[in-house]
Image 1 (cartoon, rainbow, N blue to C red):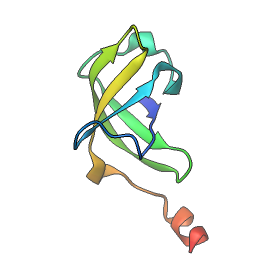
Image 2 (image 1 turned 60 degrees about the horizontal axis):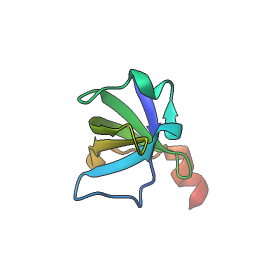
Image 3 (image 1 turned 90 degrees about the vertical axis):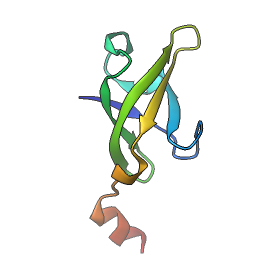
Image 4 (image 1 turned 45 degrees about the horizontal axis):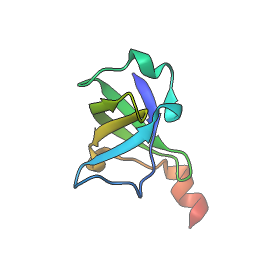
Length: 82
């Protein structure tokens, strides 16, 4: 499954976000609408699941429906920040 870096502060409506082609771990040209992806936020190391809803080839953006409830932060990260 393709991994795409997201910014947790970027939202488009209640369940969408977007990332640039440069945030894709792999070849963005291989992606298509409907593909499931793993989303991750490297700063807090959160990760979860999403689905590509739109690809803007001109602006090189990928719109992703994120299952925000699926986001997890590793336990060791929480313990270190406490």
